[in-house]
Length: 231
Image (tube, rainbow, N blue to C red; front, side, top):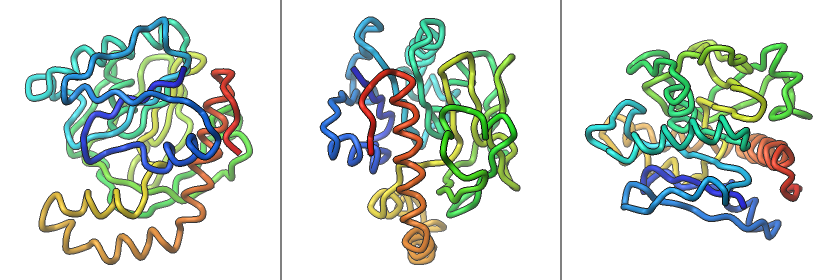
């Protein structure tokens, strides 16, 4: 079964959930920030971990992150397909011993990402263009874990996606965003609230590409777990 970890009430699965529901693919969402237990390892066919306003090292303020990183390490060791988005990618890096650095390579808004040579050959990005538009919202960034493979970069953030082992991926960008998600994030502070109209306009200009990227990545990811295609 596909399990999704939502770390923050304002960071839901967005269009990922829409694609899954359109295709009748069953999934379970866990909310550890409000006390939900993590799933049993034996019940997980694939795991998606979403973003959040907290940092990957904020275990003191958000104690569930400590257990989540241990769980992610177990997922990787068991070679269960894993997809971490933004904070989820940072948590993957941290779980595997890499640094997550605050206030480095910050990005906000609609920006292009370019696949590396390895990324062009990687199953997560199969049938995708070498450069595609993404939505970015991050202050922190991950170093690459030992023996991992860099799959994508951008001008402002060198580490946009990586693979660890055979079937664990982390991305810095957000393929799941919808207009409502962006509006909710913009309301977090006065600086971003003043930019909401421009961010939404850019999103709508690129929305078709965003959704195509999310759908293709999700299809590719689910295929690694032997789950039905999202088409």
